[in-house]
Every structure is written in C-alpha cells, then in structure tokens.
Image 1 (cartoon, rainbow, N blue to C red):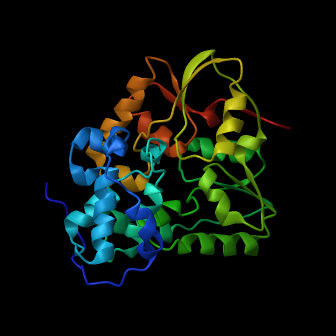
Image 2 (spheres, rainbow, N blue to C red):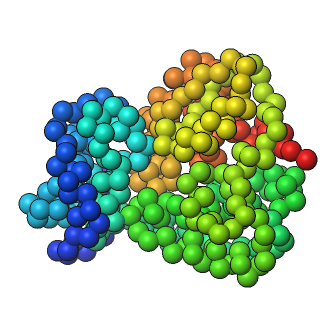
Length: 308
C-alpha cells in the first residue's frame, strides 16, 4: 500500500541541524551502528540505518538533498532507542542528530499528523492535590490512581509530539491546568516526563513502590534510552531474583508503531524471543500494550506494592 504524505515540501532554512554540524562530520561511516539497529536488521536498507540517517541529515544541512517523502520516512523510521550509540566508536550523538533533522522538516507523515491532533485535543478534568500522569487508557491507571489517592490524567505529557519533531505545546497547556487545579504533587512513570514538571513536586511512580509481587524467574524489559538513575531504581526492586534484562527496543512508541506497524511487530517479536520463554515484565505501559499482543507480558505496575 502506498503511504500518504503531506505534500508541502518547501525549501527551508536549517535551524536545529546547524548545531550538530561538527557532530555529523565526526561520523567516519564505519557502519558499526548498523549492527545494533533493529530497524535496519529487518529492512536491510541503507537509508534505514543510523549511518544512512546521518548521511541524509548531512545532505539536508548542506543543501545537497531536498526534502521529499522518502527523506521524511527515512528520518522518522527510527525508534530513537539509542542502541546505535552504544556501539559507536566515535561516540556520536546519533539520536540527537536525528531529532534535530526531524525538527527542521517541513513535511510530516499522515499518521503523525493524526497522532498530534489526538494528543493536542486530549482533555479531561483535573481535581485534587495529587495527579497521576500516564500515557495510557489502560484500566490499571485508574486502579493505581485510587491506591495513591490521586486523580488520573491519561493523556500523557505529549512526549510523542517532541519525538516527532514538533514543539510540545500540549505539555505547556497541561502545566497550566495543573496550576489552575491547585495540584501539589505530580506522579509520572516515563522518565522523560520529568523535564516537563520542573518547579513542581514531581515524583516518579517507581519511587513509591515498596516491593514487587512476582515469581523468581522472568525477563525485565527496560528500553536502553531510559535514564540511568531510573533503571537502577527498577533493578533494585528485583534484587536477589533470577532476572534477565532485555534492553532491545520493542517498537512500542506510539509514533513509531502506528507509522511503521510491520517493523514494530518484528521488533516486538525480537524482544519476545530474547525472553527465552520467561514471562516479560515491562517498565512502560506503551511497551506493555505493544508486547502483550505477542507473548506472556505484564507491566511493573501490575505487580507493584506501594508504600503506605
């Protein structure tokens, strides 16, 4: 099926990419990054590799390439998992370059236009002094909100908008709603949400977990790009247990799986295979909703015992 695109591919003046000019030139083209890229693993197309996306970014910056549908697709067909950076001998900030290139794009995938419209239109009442911010409509959100004596906001912090490459104005509107409602504490899950709640009493829900009620042998899926401090807190919950950690990307981010469902399905099955038959515990409701279609999966929040 032929993909639809916004056909506004006007000539543009680069802004964000200019900041990464020296970083882009650092790339030697060694292709080590290709070995870690799960998208390239399945498509085997150069433009779908981290190296290919850096070359595209360089071409856009110098004017040797003009934005078109194929370039937009190539730059967006990346889950931003940072696994490529873990093997880059030049320690290039590949993900930051891709984000910058997306920021400078004029055109957009139709799927991303729809996602942005849905996120920006999200609205639900905020009441009380404690708010649980989750990017999920799963019933577990309301159950946990009740346990924590908090109101639930299911629309997330709008991080997908930023990852697509647009300004996250939704986060600003959410902050204003929180202020108007007189919320004193914000509880969030995804580590990247923290930056949106500067100036608030904001706590990650993992800090409120006392223990986990799970068997002794399972696989824990933690995306590689998650904050190191957050990961250590999660691992502490599983001390002295037979745990296998999986850091590969499952393709579960909404903006990726809805735009590239075939690749997202293959990446999810890669993670399931890595579990070697063990039950998988995710640390992200987005990952949970995606992976549960393909294997025996629960989320950390399903087995969490919260502090009094």
